[in-house]
Image 1 (cartoon, helix red, strand yellow):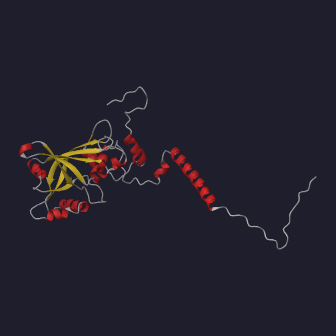
Image 2 (image 1 turned 90 degrees about the horizontal axis):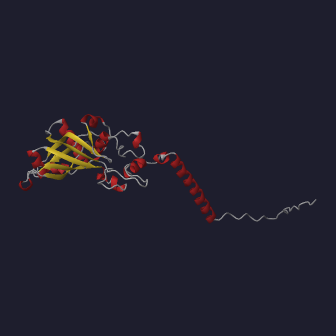
Image 3 (image 1 turned 180 degrees about the vertical axis):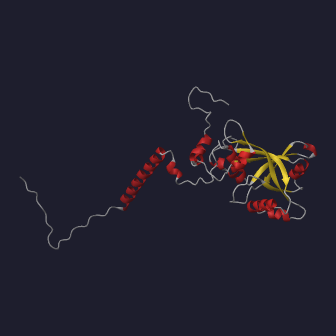
Length: 271
């Protein structure tokens, strides 16, 4: 039997210190651990259907699901800072033709709850007011891309998945001195500070109006427009988020990939 030899340190003998791990080794170790953690989190997120990522996303301003037509209409109206307003022209050369203009609007003061009613200022120096003075019927269009939501998410503004609404009705002038005039003016001043200068400019005589809605058409996905009743429109609350809207990533994906398009070979997409 062989007895292993043992080396003893002599009294007063110094022991060579252990060489510290180099800085480069710590950096490599840190990168490896970080990569493992990120891979684990990614796998966990995929298995949980994206719920992990939702914890870190602020979807408080995400649009509602495309199946909630009334809420989509209220959502777009509340977010709108301006609309494309169409009227019937009174200009001799194009009398009776559709005419369109950009009009600043507000349905409430900024950061306040939605009312669903669009307020706006007009002046008789502008052709839109002249048209509406003769025939106050109008249609406004609002799009989800007014704040470049569609563009940022790779959706062309003309695609039906970039939601839009067409609201038709009549322009009603609001009498100065009423509670509604005070509310509408405050809403406009909050969102459009320049409006205070408009009404103070001599000779322009701006007056406050609101859109008295007759019909609301919502186009927010493939399959044609949907018509929202006034009862459903007024009952919808765009400030409340449904479960279907809680995942902004799935909502964006849903809008980008139409169900009518199939990846199966031999199938034909229906118009």
